[in-house]
Amino acid sequence: MSKVIFDGDNVGGGPGSGELFIFDTSTDSLLPVVSLNGASPNYVGQVNSELGSNLSPELLTYDGFVFLQGVDNGFGPKVNGVGQETQDGLFVYDIATKQSVELGKQSEGSNGLTPTDFTVYNDNVYFNGDGNLYEITAGKDIATSSLLSQMTVKEIATAVDPSSMVQYEGSLFMNSGGNFVSYNSTTNTILTRAGGVNPTDMIVAGNDLFFNGVDPNGLGNELFVFNPAASLTKVIPDPAPSNANATDALGNRGLDPLDIVGLPVNSVGDSTAYYSGVKDAFGDRNIYTTTVGPHGGVSTTEAFPERTLGTNPAANNLDPYDLTLIGNDLFFTGDDKAGGRGLFVLDTTNNSYREIVSSSQYNLDYDNTYNPTWGDLNPNTLTAVGSTLYFGAAVGNGSGPAQPNGAGALYEITVSASGAISHPTQVATNGGGPGLGPVSLTHT
Image 1 (cartoon, one colour):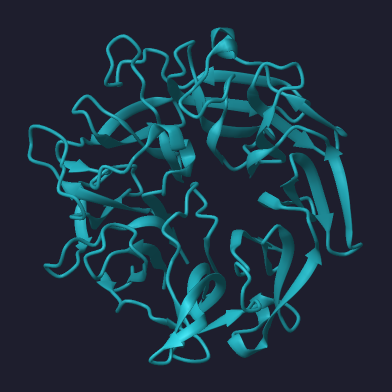
Image 2 (cartoon, one colour; image 1 turned 180 degrees about the vertical axis):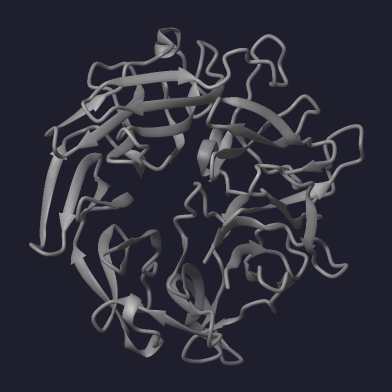
C-alpha cells in the first residue's frame, strides 16, 4: 500500500508551513497530520519547508520509514516546561506504528545535526549531518528491521560535506567539497574520481552515471557521464554553442542540466537521460535528451526545438522542472501561455509533447512562490506512484492563472495501459481550511 508524503498546511501558515502529511493511495484518504514527538513533549518535529530538488533531499521515505529534518524545540531556557532554543534535528517516523524518534541528538548550544541529502546505500540511509557523512543503521540494515529502537547514527567521515549522493556500481558517489568522490562501505575507503568538477543532480540511467558538472575548459556547467569500465569522466558536447556565454536564471553558464532523470536501459544497451537545459544565449530552458551507447557513442538533442510553448514570444522560455517518468511518459511543470505553471507530458518514444493541465485550469504555482532563480531547488510538486501522478495545484478561474494563496489541494492523474491520460481529480483538501498547500512530494 503506497503512501504519498508531503509538506503541507494544517494551521493556516501557508503552503509548506511545516506539517507532515500522508495520503493513502489504496483508500484515497488523507491520514491525520503526523505529530513527531520525541522522548518528551518538549521535542516537536516539523518538516523543513525548504526541501528543494526533485529528490527532496531533506525528506526520504524508505522501507516504511520517513527520514527528515525537523525542528527540535527541546533545548534552551524553559518557559512553563517548554524549551525556547531550537535545533534542526534528525527525525524518523514509522508509518505502520505511527511512532517517531529523534536520532543523533546534539548538545545544547549547537546548531543541531541539520541532516540533508538523504539517500539509500546498501540498505542503509546516509546523509549529510553538519558537513559530515553519517549512516543510519538498524541491526544488520534498515531493510531487515522495523524497530525504531534499533536505529542508530554512525559518523562515517568528517568534513567531507557530502551532497548529491547516489549508489552506483557498489559505491556511494557524491559531491565532496566540489570534487567527484566515491565511498565504499566494504573497504571503508573514500576515493576522489575527479577534482573540481562540482557534480550535482547525479542520477543513474541505464549503465551510466550522469551529472551536472563544471566544464574544465571554462565553458560553464555541462553534462558529464561516468562509467568505471571506461575509467574516465567525460563532458558531453554542448548541443547549443550559443549558450556557452549565456547566464541562466541561476547565474550558471553552459547547458547547465538540471532535474536529470533516466530511462531504463534499452535492448541494445543505450543509457538515456532527460533534463532541463539552457537552449540559447538568453539563458532560456527547454527539455533535452542525451543517449550514450554501449560502446561510447553519444547523441544529444533538444526534445522539441520549435520552442513555441513559453510565455515570452521572443524567447519562448518553457523553464521546465519537476521531471517525473511514468513508463514512456515524461511529466514536468513549465511556464505556459496563460502566465502560470502548467503540467506538460512528453512521449519519450517519439518526443511529441503537449500541455495537459493549463495554469488557467489548475495552477501548479498556486501560492506564487515559484522562483526561476532557484531552478530545481524549488520544492517539487510532482510524484509518481505506479501509473498515477500526484501533484499540488489550485483551481484556476478559466481565464488566467489561479492566484488564491494557500488554496492548493492534492490532485491525481492516471495513465492507462493504452497510454491514455485522465483528467485531473482532486483527492485531498484541507477540509474547508486555509488550503492544504502540498509541496515537496515523495512516496513510499
